[in-house]
Image (cartoon, rainbow, N blue to C red):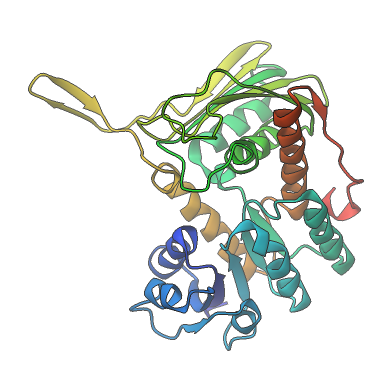
Length: 337
């Protein structure tokens, strides 16, 4: 297929604008055909200099715009369900940023809607599955060279939390990535969660309990712990160490540039996720475009999006109760294995 894939980008904020740039300048085989955002001026700014793009304030108008053959959803999480169902109704393949749908009930509605179609249309944007280090770790664990995985030790640190960031969002926004990564790396569902809270950092905004320690149990007895610290003050760090029966493997040690000058040396530390995972985002979107142009859907499914939301909800309940909370998942439709 020689014709470029016309993509409607839904959402022109921080993430959406970066995807617009990516499709226009980095990814091959696609073009931005339409963009939708409630803020028309923001949408116009995001596509400035790109020819042939229609700008809309309504999702439905962008999905129906001339030349649109696929959709990329990068709007806030609460808007995803309507956009996904709109894409399904039009038979449009879609890449949806995480969280697919924040509430598990709404996420399950999306799963059931796609299952009724009898075919996959959606890929969910868990970009760590496309990060080179995570891919290598997954391959190593799948090979069995280190024996059965027993534990994953994970770290998730941010420089600072954005305005309006809540304690619940440490789990349902930040740790959501570790939830999916753990399910994928171990090929197991997460069955229970406990959240422990040390003394909150003085760098945390008033009312935000940060950092936290999240412990997940899996269906075959592995344990996954996550240190989440969204106001570390120094950088964006994501690390993961797998402890197996016959060895360990660790990723995320920032093999970055080291600058040496008078008085010492300084190693660069990424300041946000768009820097740390820039290559992963590029590979993710390119893989989606390539598959879509071939009439295929690959990558994380809406079931993965639903499972992440259900586990995150259990995590928030564990935050609130201080106890261990089990994860309840609906039966998995045959479409998702």
